[in-house]
Length: 387
Image 1 (tube, rainbow, N blue to C red):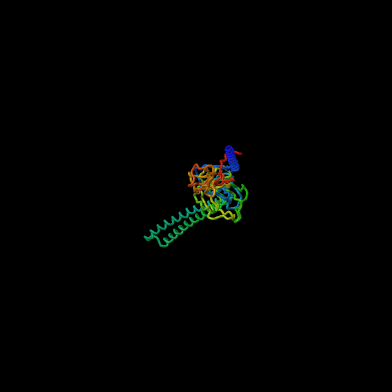
Image 2: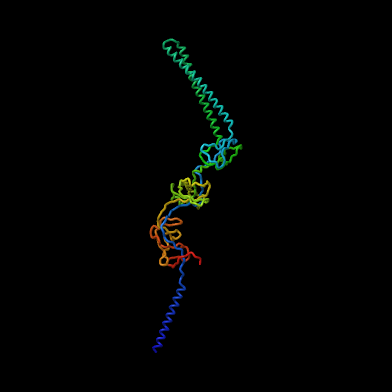
């Protein structure tokens, strides 16, 4: 009987062990597979808080003059062409003014003649004055009559007045010359500052007229100062209060691959643009401060600005795409994800500062948007190899 009982016990034990093995196998086969995630190691580095424009900006010149002569006439001289560099005061265009030039020569001749008249009249006045002084001395000695003395003093006064009238005539002639010279100057177009001729809308020999009041026309000459350029761009009204004049900025241009930093904010508009009711903006101007930054730039280029609000040159940082719920990250502990809180500091689209709560070397999940990523799940690192 004992061997039979022993065999039954063995069979029962085998059945239990088999059931346990089958249950373990079923659990192993039905367990959730670990989620593949991309991991990132927390490190130290730079974090910058910046503000960028909402719509594309434009490169502008600090000084640009679209000019036409103030007088109508035929273009008699056009000593410049498009692309020429000119100096301040240089004549860019001159309309026909031979008649005014002849009048100027005439008035200058009148001035010469008037000066000769001054010499004659003033010489006579000087002689009459001396004669009157002699007779006055003789009169005190009763050597001449009062009538002769009175006549001499009258001549002295008359010739003195003639001298003054001659001087006044010279002044009138000089004023007339100045008027003609100003009329001639109105026929000339001079550069108000040094720059480059961007556009000419006049040709030698053609007739041009000034723009009528309130009716814009093409300028005869478009002059641009290329030594000072800036970018004007719209900033969202929510971000604008963070910006102040003098803040550093970087500029990106569609025409160039490099980002040009070293610029500064030079102006913030004192009003909000509401052309688009759902996107109200403030115009901000960023000026280039170094000559090498202007290389290759042309007014009219499209550009984007990035104003630096604050920065941390060496701080603990995490990729912004790894942050969930504003100040949490998924930390890997023993192959399982744990939602970990940290103190958030400066942030931009690339990095977020961890003021506390995270140490360099901590492994966090970068691919937080993948299906199945949540606290408590087992994970394996995605090795990047297609399976």
